[in-house]
Image 1 (cartoon, one colour):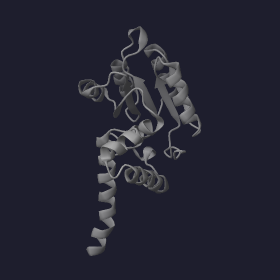
Image 2 (image 1 turned 90 degrees about the vertical axis):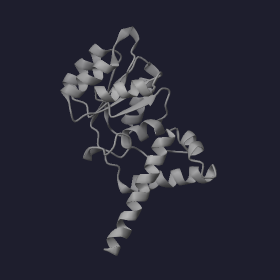
Image 3 (image 1 turned 60 degrees about the vertical axis):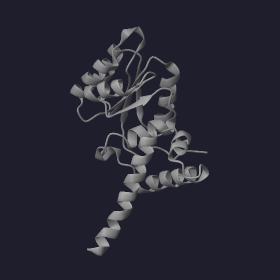
Length: 193
């Protein structure tokens, strides 16, 4: 089953990870959407690239091979480009590490391994309102909810099971459903006024 393409405006992405497979997969994902993808495997490479390209989105592995500190990198990227959306990834993500990542300036965190829908969800939904360049258009949002509804129907309405199928945390799914419900109530409340 094909997924809807990303539909937000990002000109450049910086991906920092020591896994060449992950770098290749993320590069393919964004290249399919005509986004310039810059990859680095070390903190030094990432800082050099960031100074030249000022990425709109950065995806940073917290624990890099060779002792690179992804948290310091997240802080540095945040200082250099406060408007950038920065996400932190790790194979050892936990509540404490998530808090440290957010404290360093990350908008969202993901546990590796993750798939495209999980990354898409993190970029477009987590961390509260996204900057205007990250807004998902209404058509894509409708397609996303149609897919979520099909998955929910297939698992008899179980949000936990649906979240597993979708590859996203249950809390993210619940947040999406609450946001949709709130949007659906807005037009009705305007008509009553």
